[in-house]
Image 1: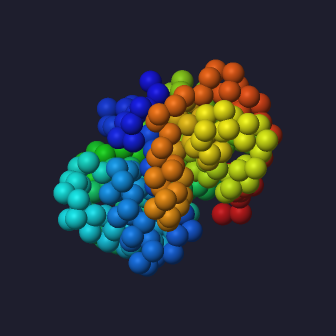
Image 2 (image 1 turned 120 degrees about the horizontal axis):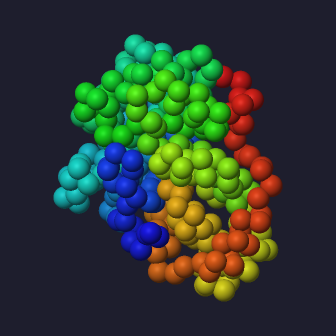
Amino acid sequence: MTAKHLADTTILANGVQMPWLGLGVFKVEDGPELVQAVKAAIRHGYRSIDTAAIYENEQGVGQGIREALQETGVSREELFVTSKVWNTDLGYDATLAAYEASLNKLGLEYLDLYLIHWPVAEKYKEAWKALETLYKAGKVRAIGVSNFHIHHLEELMKEAEIKPMVNQVEYHPRLTQQKLQAFCEEHSIQLEAWSPLMQGQLLDHPVLQEIAKHHNKTVAQIILRWDLQKGVVTIPKTTKEQRMMENASIFDFALTKEEVEQIDRLNQNRRVGPDPDNFDF
C-alpha cells in the first residue's frame, strides 16, 4: 500500500499505526525556531515528530507539541512521537532512567516509539530488556532500534522476547540498503529513513532532476516519494514552513516502476553518517 495522504500510516508488527511521513529535528537547536517548526508541522497535518536525547532539543519539541495541541485542537493520541536512548545510557537501569528523563523533558506521559540510537556492543541487549519492560508496562506504544545492521538485529533477536518493530537507518538513493530492507521485511520490522535527502547532496543529480521535471516536482519530492513507494517511513528534517509543505506534497503523483528502478541504480553504498560497524562509540 502506498500512502495517498499525509495522514496515512503503516501498521507496525504490534498493530500500532505509524505515519509514513514525519518531521525530523536532528541538529535543530532548542529554542523558538524549533518550537515554531513543530507547531507549523502539526498545523499542516504532520502527525509524526522524531527527536532523540542526544539532539538536546526534547524540551523545545515538547513545548511545540503542547502549544500546537492547544491551538489546533489536535489530540495527543493523534500524534506519533519518537525519541531515542543515547549510547552513554545503554544498560538496563540507565535506559529506564533515560526514558523517564526524555519524558520529563518532552512533558509527555508516554512515547509512541522509543529506539536504541546505536548498536553499542555489549550494551544494546541490556538496553533492549529495558525497552521490553517499558513496553510491557504500557509506557511506550512501540519499541525499536536505529542504525542496526543485519548482524546486530540477528544478535538482538536471539535473546529478545519482543522483536524490534522499527529500524531507523540512513537511507537514500546512494545507500539503498537492499539486503537490510529485505531482512527487515522478512521479520516484520518497519524500515525508517534518516537523512533521506543525503543532507542535500542529491539535489542536483541529473537522473533525479530529469524525473522531477517529468512530474513537475522538486528532486526532494521525488526522493521522498521513492521512499514511500519502497515501503520506507521517512522523516525529512526542516524548520522552514514552506519546505515542510513542499515535503508533504508527495501524495498526488506516483513514480513509474522504471523510475523507481532508475533511482535504485544510483546506489553506491555511500554514507553521510558513520557506519554502525566502525562508529567510535
